[in-house]
Length: 311
Image 1 (cartoon, rainbow, N blue to C red):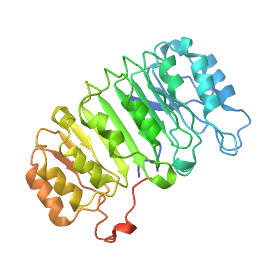
Image 2: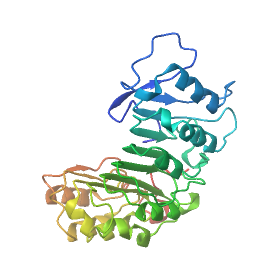
Image 3: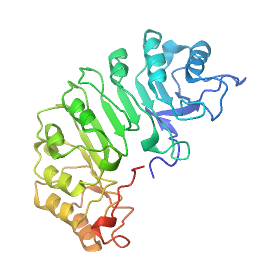
Image 4: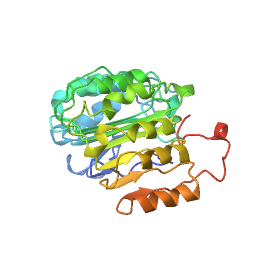
């Protein structure tokens, strides 16, 4: 599962955990992605940790930051962390990548993470090239213009439709990679096909080369829409994984526009029959297809099917 362990690299840099009382020499500011997190019961809050980081690491050289657990004991809103980070934006001119909420399910279930409006992060860092956000509860975004962002990723057990619409309404001329974990309605994932139309009809995001519409309980409907979506012709990779994709959705994909130009097609965690999996491989011989994590044999009843990440 994607949220079962911490990432080891971010923005093509190795992760380095910042610890205020670590006496060892620190790596060069721009040579690693700095992870900041609080242990349960920590004596300091995130604002104090952030200030210590800026004092001990040359902030002018920092290229990538990963934010893990930001609470001391009970789960709290990420807003103070966002406010602390954006307040010092002028001291981080080289920041290119930010991951907010790099938290495993052992630390907090993804749908228990208390999020907030992440628009200030994009407004504060015009040089940002990559933004990843994990968590959906109280997550908000306003339509923005950002000229440098090339990768945007929202990982959620339930992504609010308002966030999906805000992404669709944003001016992101440099965006090459968009990943949305749509999740389930039970945890706030209320986006429908109409909300995805601006991504699919090719009218938005002119630089898009990778599209991920994943982790959805309407994965078959998404596949059917993608099958005839104008944007697909300019994609290099497509991700429809982690959801409840069945033979119905896969059939729509194969009967739609050609997909042979794709470098990769990610369908892992699916409900495809063995025959359909073989049909996909035969139809797309030059495409790297991920068909791992097959669930069809274990859950034939549609009502028992589940997305990869929800709670």
